[in-house]
Length: 124
Image (cartoon, rainbow, N blue to C red; front, side, top):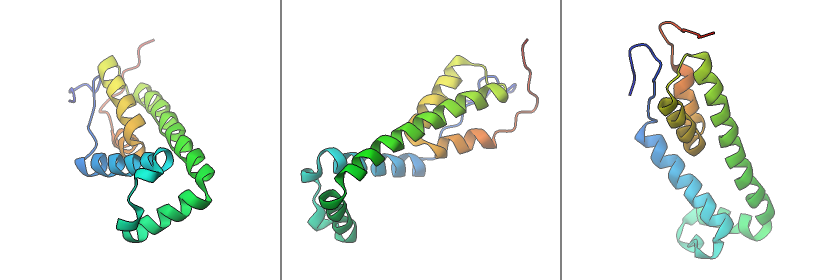
């Protein structure tokens, strides 16, 4: 979805990043909250690392999980500022940028940063 004047510009992240971030954050969430359900013995080196981290650094994993989501939220708030700076005024487009950036972080924010509007019209 993109309009010619940039007021409702939105570009979806690539499927590669959507799948990668979803699987990564899903795995991380399972490790932090349901570590007993993760089949570490069948995951090779990743399973060994996971088992070590769960057994020895569970509080670090827990705090890191929250930190990751806080960083995504901050990135989404930055995306709202960038939308304003680049003239994206459609509330639907801004909401899409916010949600996408909360879910996928820098992969979404990077698309917005790359956007070069033809002209920026600021209303006073």
